[in-house]
Length: 513
Image (tube, rainbow, N blue to C red):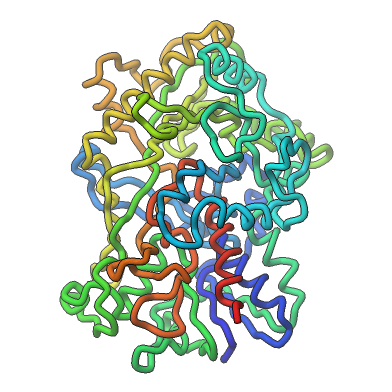
């Protein structure tokens, strides 16, 4: 098989590329995905995403043991399905803060440069105060159709605490609180596959290849000419190979292809094509902890999985099945010295414990606390041809301090008069730690990923960066990386929005004369 472009990974950025590149009928595109089709009911139903974890739709990764996290190996779900993690995520559309993109300090990637690409992607349904959102793009962004009564109380609690009410969360500054905008269309998940891929599959010049794991990029000299699949067989590229396999998959493929730290590749028995020491380095992730309390009234998502609610969803597209679980957010600074929010609070009208895999019998509420700008840096390496994920959580003491301060604020939220009718005592496994030492220990013992790894194929203008500002892999021809692995630092938001933006901007870069 031979195509003009071979795109590896049908996740958020890959779906964008498949659509934009194949818009030219003279160009042929292959989109290669390791997973299968996104036809499972739980993908369509917004509240169903935890049921997809640790299934065939999930890569089901685990990290290396984390010394600063009580020696635990943490579960990292990633989408192994058409749509990638946009088919498994909580549908939260949160671009981040202006500073997130300006701090990259990469020409063409500042906030004002990338803003048009966010807007190009968006099709805002409902309120669009100030024209913040685009209104003609393929990706539907809407409000939740049936927010929980306790979510309204959380928003009132944020007001009581003096936080700023954001009329639109995705403006230049996200400091404040807001209901969560979601990628849903009439109460149904609207993934990158729904927005970009499905309409484009009608084109004869686009081919989707599922169930096909890419083993390596094929080179002739320093020129990428295609990819080799597990089990044999190649797909050739006349113009470019584009890796859109995510912050784990893209560096993993590069390393297996002989692109990375030369000494480490030789130790793995991999022939070196290009010595790029930073491939796999600069790994960052949003680490999450939280406060769980009992709910005094039986109004939460606990026991909402009923036939009546299913029928309500099927007939009216309303009710608790439309929830994304993280129904409201607040972005705060834990210190006046912070230039922008450093912690996010996410409210869930139910006990979201252990990625939603644990199902408590008692009604409960959650305020998640997320570290937005970690100073810790980890890496992806190879061992026996498989990726070793070491996020190096909490290796910076500043990360611990910020999370401890965030937990204190979350506890205060539940102590407000607005939450008093609902918030009860601590809900197991939460044990209501009080001192800084106890709070830090809670983070170490129970902290988990918020599913936002980035940075492992860092973009920059310096010779040490993995890709240049046009996302071309340094020292190689006809090879780019287009996904969140190119982000130099994490955004103060969620990573689905920048993944889509990166795909949109990359398409213009690739097609530029």
